[in-house]
Structures are given as structure tokens and as C-alpha cells.
Image (cartoon, rainbow, N blue to C red; front, side, top):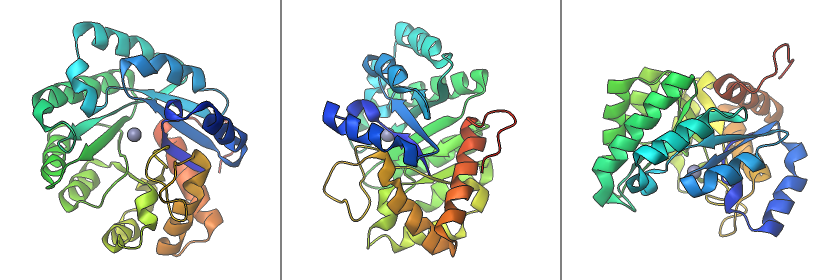
Length: 258
Ligand SMILES: [Zn+2]
């Protein structure tokens, strides 16, 4: 199993210990450091089968400055870093910083392109406006490798993502009873575009709803994905492990995975 989106640095010490005890169940984990105060800690956590991403979350986009850009460029070149992000648009928590969010998004997209790293995108709004704006941004900028993290099934984003060859990463909400439309999207998307994630400590899948998430709980989202695709668990696991390795390039040369 691969968890393509976690925030291990958000875990309390005893939660982190528990998460680390279960790392052997996972092929790989990507842990994302989402603001300058978290990049060093995130890199320290990126050992063994844990890899790192560094970026500026849209809700922290107001922090962007020449110094922060320089620091991000510095951390992004570290050996364990396999993606830039998460970046994107969040009009749910911080609608007032839209201009700064776009600026931070453009900068991180250019950095990802320059360093040949995938770009991890976050999007959230009450009315779908951020999703529409991000779909327009995608079609205009066409990043080479891009991940739609915690994909929500928004139709314009699905269409744009397909056009630019994005990866669609499914999180705990895939298991929620009411999300039939999201499961329909998971059923029809091309198999080589599918990823799974936890967004630890957020978005826990059934049956862990209401509690804090852990990377090994990606099993429940993967089980649901297997079910909607008509695959065995082992087939869905091999598929998403392979897709993640292709996206984040943590397959050792000559490796035999899956
Ligand atoms: Zn995240």
C-alpha cells in the first residue's frame, strides 16, 4: 500500500510512534511539510520508506516572500524530496488571500517544472469556485506531473485533470456512505491515474471516522477503490503502488515493484 499524502509532522509523539510501528505495511508514504516552520521537521521524518514534499499551503500563501521562495528552493533540492506542495486554492478558509494564493501557486509550479518534480494540488471552497478556478489554471499551465490531492469529484476539475494527465488521489471520503458520485468518478477514471492517500491526521476513512487518521488506514480507502473497480485488494494495491512509484519516482533503478 502507498499513502501519497500524509502530514506526519502534525502527529503527537505517541501518535507518530504508532504510525511508525505500522510503516512496514506500506510500500511508501509521502509526508508533506506545508509551511516554512515545518520543512526541516518534515525532512527529518523522511527516512526509510517515507519521502517528503515541501511547499506552501494556500492557507499560508500570505507568507510568500523572496526569503521564503529562496528557502523553499533550497529544501526542494534535498535528496528525499519527491514533490512540491501542497499548493493550490482554498477559498473555504482564506478567500481573502486569493491573489497571494495564485502567486504562490505559480511560483511552486515553476519550481516543480525546474526541478522536474510533481506538483501536489489542494483545492477547497463552499461553492465550487476554487475548483473552477483551479481547473482553468490547470488548462492554462499544463504542469507535466500533477496530483489532485483528496480529489472531491468536482466535474470541471475532473475534466481538466484528464486533459492534462493529472493523477487523481482518493482519500477517506471515498468510503463515506453519501459519496456515491465520488465512487462513480473512481470507477470511470483511467486506471493509470489512480492514487490513494490518507491526508493524516485528517479525513479518516470508515470505520475510523471521528478519530485522527494514520497512514496505514489507507487500507480502507484502497479496499473501497478495489470494490468500485471490480479488482481484488492485491490488484488494486499493485496498481496504486505502481502509479505512485511512477509519479514520485521512488522505485529504485532495476527495482522489481510491483
Ligand atoms: Zn494535505
